[in-house]
Length: 268
Image 1 (cartoon, one colour):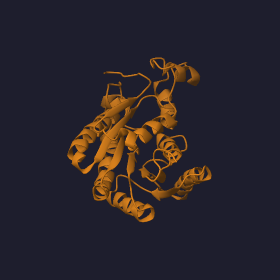
Image 2: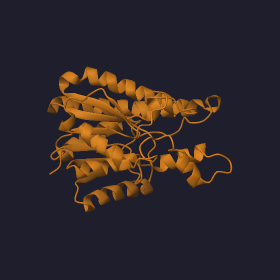
Image 3: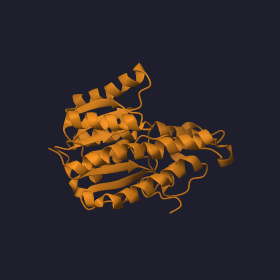
Image 4: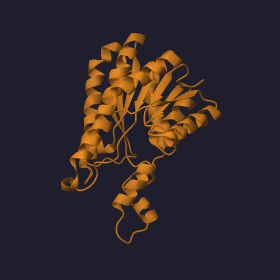
């Protein structure tokens, strides 16, 4: 049956097969949840990619549906939440995973657009979804919201000013919502992944790769500071933490920013 049997979960930014969002969808389905898989859809190719993710979950025995969602659009967020409740009859867990990996580079070179997009997606995207879902959770007697921050939202990483600022803000929002809606039995927590082997992780390797260094050398060097086996995390390992925070096993856990980084904690 699984620890999430009977529960419905919505995951944003889950259309990438190698991303944290879809890794969480796999973990949630494995734990017994019915899952709403959402992502930004700009055209037919994006829709087909999203439908393919749902097809994988269904082929594995899960129950899932796809919804297009631009988290920067409050109306879309509201529509998707309404559709979820109409189709699934409830909404117990939200994993606010959608994010913008920009805002990275030398501080003086970052543009207003990079800062503004980081803020619009990484922070206001969560605000929009939470505004849509919290009234529903209040009505049904509670729920669990998990926000994807980053280790870069807990500690310092050079040349990550735009990205880090938005991820620090996610943690601040998480803690305030946990206090404000605790009486409604709505738990709000954040996960703070470190080095995760996703497309974004590969882009980070390229970003930090030194002249003359091959990709594999740079990939290994990037995790030499990780105490746990000097390795990258897999997306499903973040997903498993989402399952825990969304389950009754974490019934007294709220307002937490949980590092999932193999012991790596820069700036802490």
